[in-house]
Image (cartoon, rainbow, N blue to C red; front, side, top):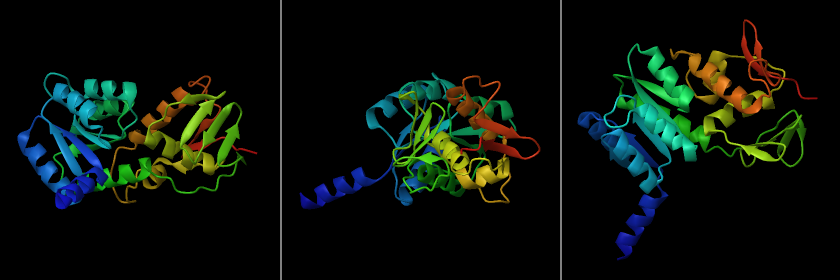
Length: 249
């Protein structure tokens, strides 16, 4: 009984990953590899099952194929984002840029292109979980009261990783908050897209990736924070460089 209890507690302590893909070989490989590096893994073979498994198991991260029967990856992402900010990594076809951009716009945090190596996916899972679960102390440059940065009617609580407008909470995904935190803590400093990918997504400097993942997340942040997203006053475009947050005095 004691051994069983210890095993159950150990399983409960592990971070849980939901892998949803209609290809049995991919499910099997990812389940095996992710379990080997210490995660608890649940699987689904179509979008409908993915939604059901998600609701039953409350995973810490979802790995989601875009092209699945019954409900595609877009539909699953929409359903998850109705109630949860859990990180989502989508699996997309090689060369299909519109597929991954659509996934990101719907709320996915990152993507991996098929065919991929399990090691690559393991690295992305680790990086996304580290950033979205981060509770590291920060030293912001803005007006701070007990880890709260205030600019206009926006309040950013860096300890609880929450954002408020006029005391109404604005829901951000973990990666959206990490991106906002980077820019706010260095207000007035412009970051290139590649620098943002390195700081927020933990991509190595020589890693080739479509930097539009940054553009999509910036667009999502603006739609949630700006009074007029088409004419942003908080998250600014630094022409020829990338993005920056307005200087906080």
